[in-house]
Length: 147
Image (cartoon, rainbow, N blue to C red; front, side, top):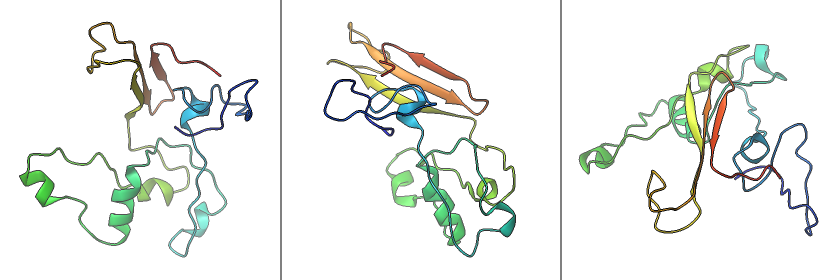
């Protein structure tokens, strides 16, 4: 989880304002992170700008592969029956002024608080999860302390 710790009264406490929450929960203060892109490939029109599109850290794989002109598909993993990596080439978003999100939604948190745990939180195991969409809506399920 990203964000500063928000353990009030503890040895370290961060202020994630204006975002709600902090490290260890599914609110924006615990999931959003600042990043930057620099280098000669970055068009002048977007230098010094801000991107608010929905980008997941897994997207850096496909983005760097695209910049290197390398196919991100893993034949060995596919032959073993593994699912394809959920990574999208975000270069069109990063290199275009006002680039719109190509990722429509993502799971930002999924935690079972006790064992045994299944994807549905069965057998009384509390399930905490969050789903974020590209319009900025977030569904938080379970008990996630706002911090």
